[in-house]
Image (cartoon, rainbow, N blue to C red; front, side, top):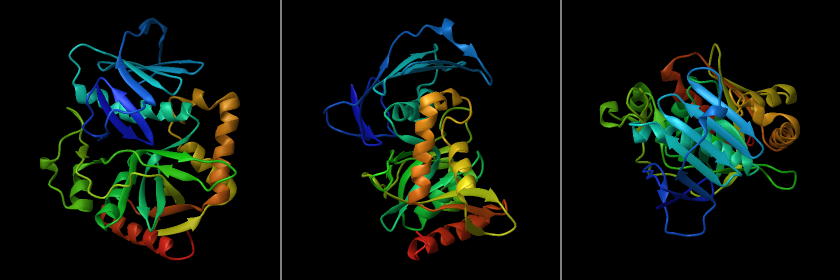
Length: 303
């Protein structure tokens, strides 16, 4: 067995995860184990992905990868397809499956990246391909600390300021982004898995290991120049809901009473921190100007 920590949780796993921070054997919050999964119950959707939703249980099947079940916020069961590359199993486990675990434990989970600036977290949300990881890597390259990449976990309630929980010290970057933001040689970085263009940047020297207060949320968008402006309540709520980790494909998790709780969590964020739209033309070289603008926000009274 292997023991790790991520998002404030202690994990016990039958699989080895070099991406995660290893710990000594201790009390366990989540178990990751092999087991059989009934695949007849899955509903075929799109892109080779099937899903099954039940009370306190969510299951997925990825074609040529395997089946996975998440239960009660405490257990991930994996039933791999034969001959699947092990690092390919890591992608859903460290992505949507841990996101479901955290959702089941009552956290607000966004699709984004975050860095620590002056003791607070700057969170970046956007559609796929809009540079969340690249902006986080650029700020990391400018001396700031990484908090998380891909899955942003927020603890929000009406009594305390929202907090962001760190994930594990890895950035997932396209080759040109790794070269631009960190000066890396992409050929020296491992691919996430065979057939994936993105590289894994694991040797993170500056990584936050404890929760920290949320300073601001930035929704990345296309614009004529680099600028940021505050979103009004309705638009801010729309963006938080749109960029919830389950908004596409697993929206069933956000319906009924769970949807009401999710809405309240989003409103708690909006009441406590500024939500900005951060715009730029779609040119990689302007990401540095975006990073500088975020830094200026955190140094001023705007955050």
